[in-house]
Length: 136
Image: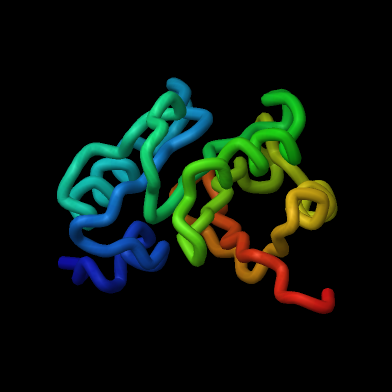
């Protein structure tokens, strides 16, 4: 049995009691990952219409979803300073894959930068986005 600390959802760094907002939900998201995230935080993920402060954001993103920069700016709207931002994109070779260069460009334009990427589910990769430090 895999310990929760070793699960892909646990690697995202969310904790019990945090409010996590989800953007880009669709029929193709990984339901097991979502369920694990909800178990970790102890509640359902809140949707795109949630307008109170959140501790973290999970964005499911595919190549044909529109403008990634706009999505990231929207995701930052109610995020607590220092909150976690994870961009979940389709793995290379999967329909809807988004390249790292596109992710980095959109993140930079939104005032963020990509810090790490890992496989989070069978069809999805997770890229952690963080606020750019001063002087960058």
